[in-house]
Image 1 (cartoon, rainbow, N blue to C red):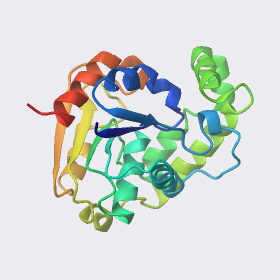
Image 2: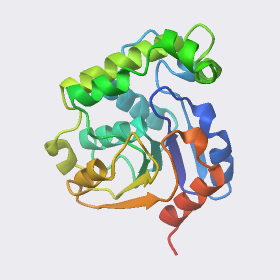
Image 3: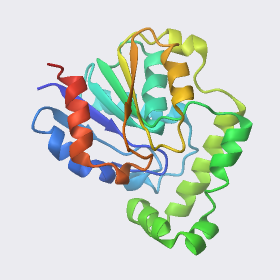
Length: 230
């Protein structure tokens, strides 16, 4: 069987993909892991960066003897996979991203991080606070928020992926975006598509950005249509 690695997004963890991994497991050998400082590794005292997470992915592949896997990368995970491929061309066979935000500027970073205040989340969106606690732990979720904010602000000030990086990526990339995604625009996604040598854009009707609002069954069907065409 071919191998698939699932990459979670910012503020996320591998537990969000249990059902997707189970469904894909009928067709592939599926691997899911947490980036440093997230989920099962939320106690790790690290500074978040895309470069760190790319090294996490590289190390995970080496430790598990995974060569040229298929990758499904949600949100920030897409940045991680693309960064690794730019540093180590030929790392994967095919990449499918979903809801990856590429438009990072000081203004967009400020806008996104403004909503990531732990006290405000507890006060105004307690259900989201409880969800983050379930992913990272009662005493760690605020640290995850804080470190994510720091990483996003740095991404806004200095590009993580440049035109030179994109030119190094030769493997096929499928960029998925939900039509209801308020965080990621069609324009910014197609702009990146044009910089990749082998890529395609697909918009899925009705899907929003949060992964927990997307049916694992529907996502599985989308991935199978891309990984197993025909």
